[in-house]
Amino acid sequence: MARGKMEVSLAATCFTPSQFPPPGYPEVAFAGRSNVGKSTFINGIIQERLAHVSSTPGKTRSINFFKIRHKKDFLLVDLPGFGFARRARTERKAWADLIGQYISGRKTLVLLIHLVDFRHGLLENDRKLQEWAGDHKVPVQVVFTKIDKVPKGKWASSLRKYSDPPFLTVSEPLMVSMEKGWGIREFESFLDSYLGALNY
Ligand SMILES: Nc1nc2c(ncn2[C@@H]2O[C@H](COP(=O)(O)OP(=O)(O)O)[C@@H](O)[C@H]2O)c(=O)[nH]1
Ligand SMILES: [Mg+2]
Image (cartoon, rainbow, N blue to C red; front, side, top):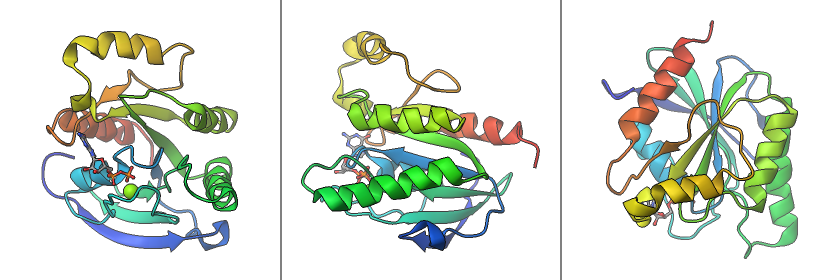
């Protein structure tokens, strides 16, 4: 994906499962706690500013489907951030329901990119997301974000700590920093080869 800009268009913005577009292209969904750096990461990948980067965490309530025309066409699905404590309980539940229904019921979902802040590791909601994915046999790839915030000398021990108990990931967790531009190429080649190996 690093080679050449992708063609991107917004395919749908959904607040309820009834608004999900009819299944068609394979879907790669991005999920993580609010403020994990998801919008920044998506924008870095698609080289556009489609995903809204916000200093107010937890603003995105909808699921956004972006049509990506690349080596292989796919839908990039931006799931709402979860676990933002300052929101009302009912609103948090609505988000959880929307994400849960998407993950449990979406036949075209081929990969869930699970973004985790490298300063914190997997927290309660991250384990919940992993559980949903596991229950519905959705392949997960873990990507640790904001690795620039953790001194390099602590990377290995942090990785060990976060892996106990183990988490689902189709290959070794990837490590990225959008601040420093680290790990983006590696992520793109991972995604390219993952999609390339699918038959569609
Ligand atoms: N240090 C650092 N900050 C980042 C990185 N990626 C995103 N951020 C910052 O984290 C905050 C939340 O980012 P955003 O993409 O809106 O997170 P989202 O809520 O998960 O979509 C913003 O202030 C970003 O500038 C990173 O790799 N390193
Ligand atoms: Mg965001």
